[in-house]
Image (cartoon, rainbow over all chains, first blue to last red; front, side, top):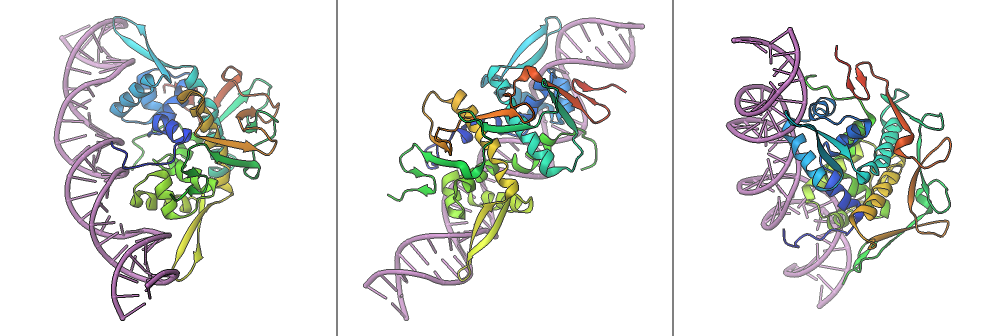
Length: 155
Length: 155
DNA sequence: ACCAGTGAGTCGGAAATCCGAACTCACCCT
DNA sequence: AGGGTGAGTTCGGATTTCCGACTCACTGGT
């Protein structure tokens, strides 16, 4: 646990530390779809029950899900996304779009409809100018001393 | 390996099967930043060398990275994102934005600048109407018989 | 020629995770 | 009384991960 490792400080890594474990994002997919119960999640995700229980605890602790009883006697719980959890949905949708594009040909197993009436095709844009994000338009700057964008500056 | 499991068919799950293993998305982050060499990746990601070697093989096989020699004698290789790999960058950026918002307060370890001159804040929008995606505006439909959005229809 | 250093991995054994099936506990239905 | 459901926990074994050390093939300095 000591600092013998020292990877680049990065919000992507931090986010993945929370939701990057196996099944975590699939849990989020399900609760965003409205499936809130343990056994439903087990079935739809295909995860072992104990692993799912561990993930749920972690996601609740992280403030991504809430657990609440929908019945005392017998105690029954449901999991719902918090605001922070809902804000991960765009990540899921972007990933789904990538999967549809590169891992399938035409056969979407799931279609999301947008309120505008069209099938949703998620597009990541720059909030400031509204243009779609393209790799060539980006320049990254590390704010942390010692970490440049092309590797650590040798001391 | 038989079909004793039967999770919801889904492009998110398929995508995660390829890039959801530990470190895979961080590899992609680095190559998108321009870091292409094995030892650089080891340092910047903080992954064990053998695991990184395994991940790189997988990503190359999946067509997300290419491996090519930048020097014969001694053989030296570099890894670059393919088109498919570059198209995962929006996923990373969206995840970074989430991490910045929920896991930090003000202190971005990394800032991405967009060609328009502003700091990039990625925003996921509907390609058809251009509006930002909000959870309330979405309706999901499963295309696979037996899989509704609120669980499998009992037989 | 000799030594140190670098890049790109591989190897081996310990530690951590994951897995499926079975079990529990508390209730409801008939 | 017997069966079913929901929400987990427990068990032992399989699979991954982790870390440090090792290899191999050079290059550069003296």
